[in-house]
Figure 1 (cartoon, rainbow, N blue to C red):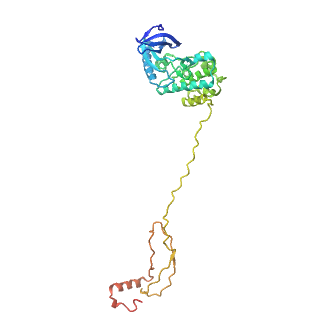
Figure 2 (figure 1 turned 135 degrees about the vertical axis):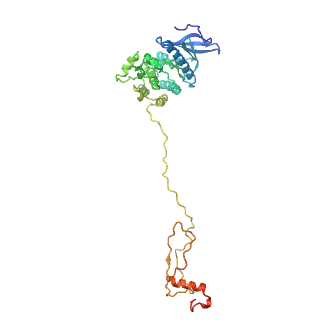
Figure 3 (figure 1 turned 90 degrees about the vertical axis):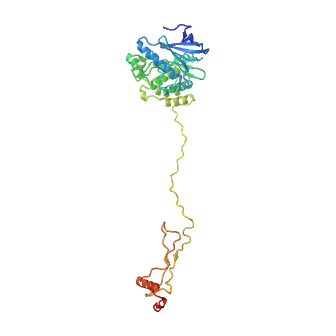
Length: 378
C-alpha cells in the first residue's frame, strides 16, 4: 500500500508529491519540518511473499546498510540523511537533487556521445568503488538510478543494498533487480558481488550510448539467453567506448574488467582518447654497473728506496779465516704489502764460517784485550 500525499513520516517529514517510481518503491519530494528544507524520501516496498520474520530482518538490515551508506563521502554517491522503519517497512531520507535520471535523458535527447557517456560512467564507477570499499553492494545499477546534472552524475536508490545476498532470500528464490541490468551470475542464483555491479554499470552505459537496452530484452531470462547464445553484442554508436563495454559485459565474472582498469579506460575516453592506449611510463635511466673500490696508495711510498744497494765489504777489523770474496750488488726485492715502509735491509751478510764468527765474539767478550791473539784486529 502506497502512502498518500501529505503523510507525515516520523512526525518530521511530510510527503509532498512523488518524483519517481520503481519496482521496489516510490521516491517522494518531502519537507523536513524540523530543519525546514526539502528532501527526497524513498518508500521501500518489500515483496509480499516474505513472511513477518524475514520482513523484520530485512528492515533491520536496511537501517544498518543505510547508515553505512551515509558514511560514504563521495560526490557521486547520494547523501543519506536518515533511515526510518515505520508501518513495518523501511524509509530512506536522502538529499533532493534538481536533476533528471539517465533514463529520462536518453528518452528525451536520444543516444548520448561516447565521450559524455564515458564521463558519466567514470563518476558512477567512482561511486561504486567507494561503496564497495565499505562492504556495500548496490545491486540495482540502471539508468533510472543515475541522476545527471550539468556537471555531476550521482548514483542513487540504495533501497536494494540491504535486500540481497541473504541466505533466506536466496532460499525463497527471489532475485531483486531490473530485467536487462542483472548480471548473468545473479540470474543463475549466485550471490551478488562487486563484479555484478560492474556488469550492471556496463549495461547502463550501453543503453546510454546506443539508445536501447542490451539485446532489447524485457526479462532477465531472455537477456541471459541472448548473452549465452554466443552472438556478439551489437554496437553501432559506442566508438572508442566499445572495448570498455565488452570488458564490463563479460559473462564470466573472473574475465570481467575490474574497477581499476575500467576507471583508467573510462577516463581516457572521457578525455577524448582511446580506451586501448597504453599507459605511458617515464623512461628509467639504467644504473651504471658498480665498480670495485680503487686502492689508494701513498704517493711517497717507495720513493726513498733505492733500486739496488751494494753490500759493503767486511770491515778490516772483522776476524776472518777464509779469504775475502768480492761482493756484488744485490738487486732490490719486491716489497710485500704488509712490510714496513722504512725497514732497511741488513748491511752485512752473514759469515759463511759460523764457528770462526762465534769464536771471535767469545774472545772479544770474555778475554781482556791484552790476551787477544796476534793480528786479531787485522
